[in-house]
Image (tube, rainbow, N blue to C red; front, side, top):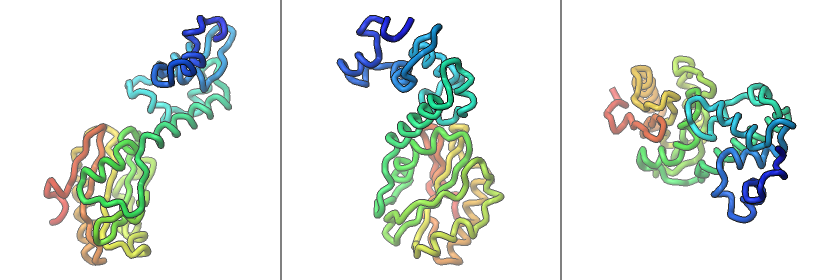
Length: 229
């Protein structure tokens, strides 16, 4: 059955036009991106099969971690459609993440968590960012120090302080994610944080906090008393 053979009220295009995007299911929204099905399946059915790849039940965000090759294994999904799906998933993620505004004040771990939770909570690999701050905790900019599962043991202190020194930052904060969803700091997290804290004293740059992002929850090493020696 083709999309045009479905009852009008069941066609994603017509449903969105008449009732708004919010009434459509994830499969129907994906079907609009997929556009056309095959001789055997409608675009909605193909979209349902793609959603069935989400073994961890993470929701539509799982598309960010599915490779183009995996998507193209689905009958009806070629190179262009796979790229379109990945682009749509990235746009959705960016739309859900608040914009990092220059001079935004980050005074509490809640401020940091609110800013980076959506960006980091669903990542499959650990990513660390250094937040460059003024003396009044206003954000200058953020720098990604590690991406793609690089362990802290391979991050040199100079990599953390290079940009703060160049930018004249008075303070920094660290934020990284735990892909497990549990933000409880590991011994490695604690050791690394103490090393950066001590290095910051040498450079006269204060480490104000290290926030660990989990799945909708976070930990502040400062609040837990785990930063200084």
